[in-house]
Image (cartoon, rainbow, N blue to C red; front, side):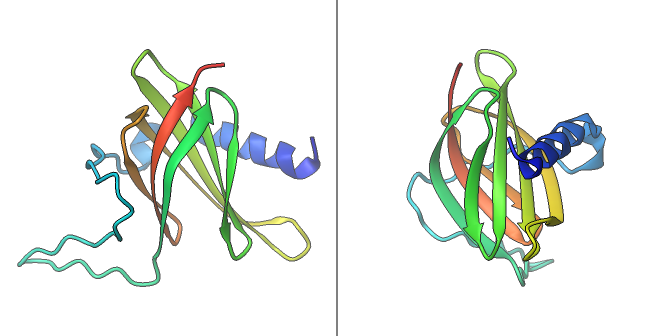
Length: 140
């Protein structure tokens, strides 16, 4: 395992120690199984304006309990998904969005966690990215 993987693993582990109260959590909204583009909800009182946000629909992603999965998002940015099965129905997924400088060192790192069920669509905002995916968790 290279130094970069060790640094990433340590970063993901330390992010798991951050209290849940440090980020906004809400019940994930069900999204259609199709790859329709995401749109921001509009209301009469406060229209949602999304600027400089990159939308990515990762589709169905096969994950294995306690094993990282790296998804390359382009532009030198990778999203590392680390699932942890909590019980028979729920899984906690740690998302680590990292970008690397030209020398290979981590330039920016954003980390978030979500608790969901296997097969249920998830949407998460992470850095400049808005990611949607449907995780399918396999036990070890």
